[in-house]
Length: 211
Image (tube, rainbow, N blue to C red; front, side, top):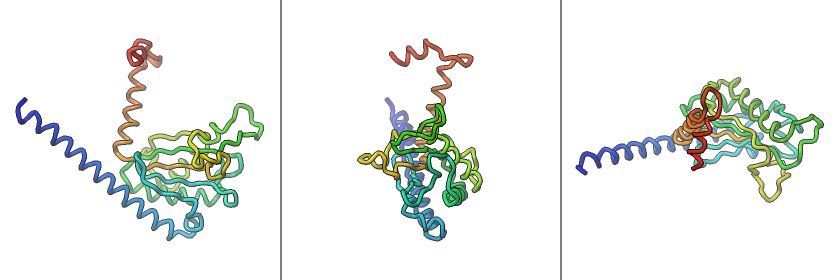
């Protein structure tokens, strides 16, 4: 193996690491800007203890969590409270300034949905709340093309694992994804498309993947 063949992969990896570092710095900067926004906006400041920001392996996570005495969502419904809509619209405007893609997930506590609607459960409720949040982000100025994924996770990912019925488990999670995380989702979509033939699943492809 000659020197040129080893230098190219190393140079590519160095460039990739530098891009990842820039992306991480951009997300850290966004976190600081959002913290300032929360303090400067009266509604957001009032609910700041229910607005949680942290950096995860996927990117910057913004969680809007419920509280027994200060709900963010109408009880057992996908309807967002007026202050929740205002918060999401402010976030939509701020996040639209970033080039990064977004992922949204809705979460409930473990209390079974019991409003009498047939075939409707916490899975549907969490997905509907996530979509309601998506709409408010867009109303606030978010380009809808920035949103890559919207999912409802019911109580599968608890905030308080020791108390599955704790209201804090009812929340919306917005992740401003790192470029690496966004690429992983794009790749998942490409792989899903690959196993289809004229709209049907190709059994041979599935067998080869399983083997």
